[in-house]
Image (tube, rainbow, N blue to C red):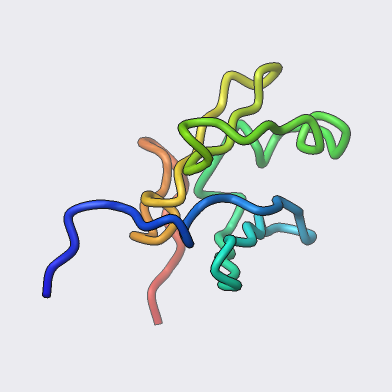
Length: 91
């Protein structure tokens, strides 16, 4: 019952941004959101720079060429912030 890989539904469909959050829509209908504080390059980017993303990694990743930033749906689903990112307080 354990999964060793991603399934096709976990492919990126769309990426958008709220005030301080990245929002990733997956092909299976799920939406992942994470604080921008987890991804300093995106946090400090302009809205125009954030909009310049491309699907990468066989559709399981997101790439920002100008920012040299890459995110994966696997990492987002695990709740994994970028190394050295600001940690948010747990409740």
